Image (cartoon, rainbow, N blue to C red; front, side, top):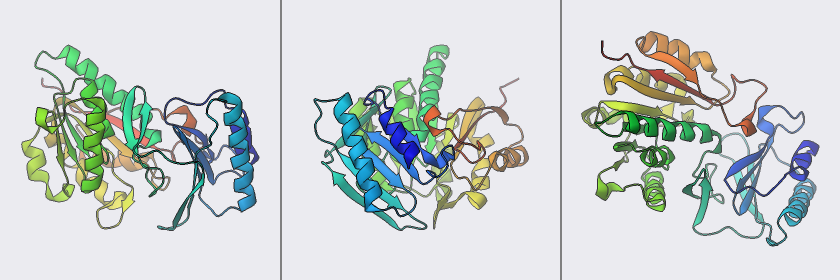
Length: 321
């Protein structure tokens, strides 16, 4: 775990934004592939993807405490959550030091989000999607400036806690339809909209459907066509979505749901499926949509094999002749 200790020692400052500090999962640090360290101010979240000893945890906790004291002597208390993730749903989460705020609100690029780092594997904000959120905000900002008819109409599939919706509305989107099977996640999403004052349901800008996407195509179609469709599904969620067989069902729908010249942002976060999984199926199932670019991942998520890392592809529908 020396590389992780070195990263802690080398921290130049306590971050202001939620971010990843150490990404052993990227394979750049031999022997540390099971470690990650994130900061959700004012809480550090240390994660191991295999069991580790109490001595190792103690060493890392001590290193974090010393570095925080050096960088921020007015913040005397270390707040540290440890999570051990193993195969399947076998997850242990412990508070090693300090406490966790309730509610726990963090920021990223000026936007505020509610997170829950002490329960579950997902904390309410996926840090590796920071560049995707930045792109969506910029796209909607540019669209609003260039289109006299108003802001972009956005479809946010697998919306989770609606971070994409918040930044789209910050960029001037006129409407965002958020769809996710989890009513609980969408409830947090509504709170995220309120935290940022971007137009809740009462203002008619954001709507929230706690439905299974594959039984809701009628409502989705009636809300379209869309200037931007965001597809950010789980790679494997038993009973609801398995990327290897279900992603194709989404791809087939995209051409009919997009405005002429509209864009689709396709996301895939599993090392088991490479870039070609998306590009080859899109070529077959939505051949009129053109691949524009692959969005870069945040530098903190660098990987020895980009085919294993998060994949975010931007496609564009043909414009009217």
